[in-house]
Length: 195
Length: 195
DNA sequence: GTCTATACCCCGATAGAC
DNA sequence: GTCTATCGGGGTATAGAC
Image (cartoon, chains in turn orange, purple, blue, brown):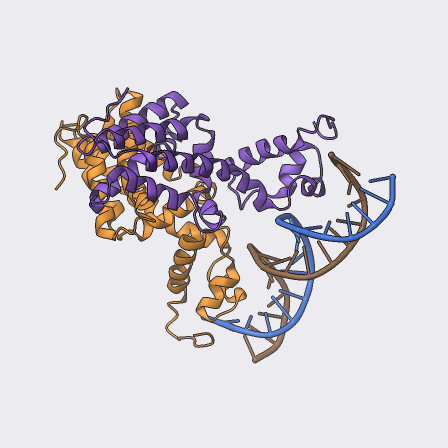
């Protein structure tokens, strides 16, 4: 595998792919650039041609995520606040986060501490989620309500954590997440039903 | 603060305290021994008088946890399998994990990747949780059921994650966890009721 | 666009004086 | 029980040839 380089220069994408896998399995801190480079059959130095730093690599991942959160926030903010809106926001959130399968969820679960530290300054994922909680719960939501909404939003991550070690398949994890979210929102969003 | 050393030799306990705080806020990998030592006004080398390695420090934390899990497993295994047993196991689990407040839960949330890697060989927290899931769900539990049980067991950790950034108090986080667990177990454990 | 070679720093850990 | 000094190693990052 080492030494064989292709010409098409999708190298940047390949670095992302390998980094995503290693960050997910070993964790961001425990993954060295040498490891990433070795897997690709290139050297550490070559990495620096494509990315300015190790942080720049991880930043690429949640910048994507954050961008899709922003889209959802923008859409939701522009809607008239009908009784059905909260459930629809949640449905879209779930679709967005489950979009790329469980890869991103697994990455987020393994690296949420690193993500917090390396977040794009002022306005990381944490703040976005808070805003979506507010959009779903409305201005008068109590803390217990906001907690339930927040936990429902994170249900995919939770299911990933629970499914780890239980040998659950991706489909089983996803449906458990859906089910858990439905339980949490049952009293709060009567119009939110599973499937 | 630096330089002032006390004689009573509670140093070992102080190291644990500082390490717990730093591991929780910065993460295990991102916390250096020098940082821990500096906070205590001693040097890195002095740390090695009290602990053999960095890993030995973190191991102390979840060894406690794991020991209390083992107690619960032993107790549950010795009980006759009545219909009320599953709910009672869960109640005890919740009491045990919430016992020391949220300090341990926060630590576990911030370091679950590190915990996985540094687990006491063959039989970390992951395996314990699986066994407790089996004890609650019984031998015939389906995967969706086991997922729900597993998520209920982890509900304190989930509530901590959700509460972070929401500004929830410890009491609010705990009651959200209790509520979430009740939702997840509602259909499964009819005799489990919140408070 | 990718390499070799290297600088520099901090890490965890050890030795031995006090 | 704590110190100074130091080791070996690996981390991120850079310079400059090809």
